[in-house]
Length: 301
Image (tube, rainbow, N blue to C red; front, side, top):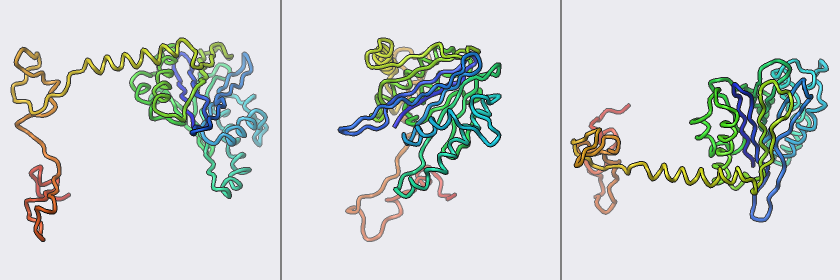
């Protein structure tokens, strides 16, 4: 499996990918998931892939030389939307060629792609392309995409990333997102490829491959965990069954409202099921209550 994240920001683009393709007890495969298509001064495009490795590699190899019915390729597309459309056609071409043969062996046509960059004077753009060749574009309301093992690294992105985030802060956030994924999923692994693109450069200027010896990533991994633990320990424990004497200023002898989890005057109860030994052949009406009945309502909706 893999994890890739891409961000479209006011200042440019950030791309980060891992390099693990499978993880088992005795086998780990390492293949780079990021490819750069560059014509310096004219266009810079970045492709990241997740899913079946053979499909991903076929798409990447075909894309460089692929031309649509009008003779257009990613190298002469007038804008990033057209380049993404050509990538979508490339995906469909590989599907038409390989999908049936894969299906005969019980293998799904499983691939996800992220594609972004800048062409000429157009603004930076970022797209997510699906296995059917269709795609969506990142906008200010949703300024990043993830493919692969996305769930572990998503919370920090949702809390931090917005269009005005600086490129350096976005790169730091992407690395923290990756660290969270590495800690929770063995199918994602080092080394990582990180590319930071500044608007209107039309060339690669900031790129690094990160392995376990990278000092900055070592610092991220240690300090982020330590600071998370410190924040956790600084949060008060919940107060159960508090009385009604609650004071937001929290003087001595009173409980702060922000720490109260439940009040003694309004206790909740779970749905209770009586043990069979306490039942006769019939269940009494009071032994098993529905959730609605326990909350004072006999109505069913």
